[in-house]
Length: 535
Image 1 (cartoon, rainbow, N blue to C red):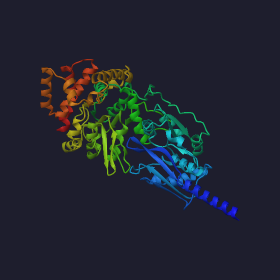
Image 2 (image 1 turned 30 degrees about the vertical axis):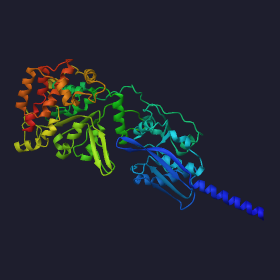
Image 3 (image 1 turned 135 degrees about the horizontal axis):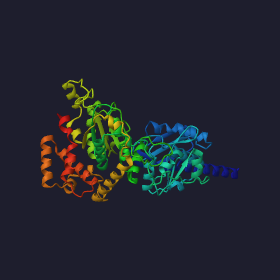
Image 4 (image 1 turned 180 degrees about the vertical axis):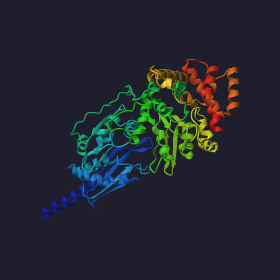
């Protein structure tokens, strides 16, 4: 009896100790959440003591999608034939003061839950960041913002990144970290336990690969040589351009071909652009870095939030999706005036700042803006061949939708007339985009050499007032020309600076070290609409 009692007591003490150890066993894995275009590392902590009311509680400022992870994780674990404790499971997403959004924490939560149930120590996973959404059957679905997460993982010193299979190529664009794609929860568990070997993903697009050929070409546009010249100048210096002309003159056709004459994106630009499209969910599954410059053409019914970004969970708008590319606003006066006015600061600063109670987010917005409009509501005001049916009051009301401050931010104004029959029927091929792009690329290279690698200025349109004075010095003749232009056109100080910047670009296209009077004259003629639209 005495021996039996001792055995029973020993068994009781052992059980209590095991329960105590199990109760305090916490599994920790690393994941990442999004904040604007940046990713922030999130530590996933799971405590599963194996007793209590069967439920999963997620804390750490989760949104609805994160709270619903409990049901997805439970179903996915069961469908994958992996163990899970039946008691209370507590999940903490740290840091606790950062709001967690989206389903990307499903996979690390599920793996941590299984590790607790198996009693497996996953300390070896400390160099691994894990991201992924789970389906109810245990398969892993792609998520947004993988590229930003990969950059954050590398910054944090993580050596491995475990992501959905469809996101692996995107993440692999970041060098210096091994990316492993998984298609299911069981496969991910086998990888972490060392039972299954996976090959690191390889980026489908190498860092120095070329962009895909465009489906359109500037050579398809007959005539309009002076408009094409304006587009070349705009592309060379990244200057905003406004096109005014009656319907059917090719304004939209010309605007859509602007990306074809822009230089190919650098590695840095490709990374910036891809990150924005990734967090917006507009990156095709299985794709790597974007190489073609974006072209965005929102409808005139777009809201302020749709154009600039925002919402309850702030995301990038059309102006940020066009970052390093072209934003085309067709029929400019049809947009709400308030919507157009909110563009002024982002165009000036190259970024959109969105303030909320929880904090402030910034999205990049360095775009080449192209606006187009008709001269009046019917489109034929001032047309020599067709009569206008609009009253002067209607014309004034139509033009007043574009404010002076917004007009000031359009570096080039160009009238687009109807194309003559001889140009339309000409068999002589027009200059292709490749030839124009070559000149534009050479001009951009001159600008980079002039500003230097350490300067934040990349193109002439971004020059600071100090740089304008330094690189756009005028001789007496040029100074007289500018004085006359300011007097006749009623230019503001901003308009004065923009003429000098355009003149600098014209000089760069000509290979001139100095801004000459002829360069200034060409730049001034592209501001001839100031009086017409402001009057």
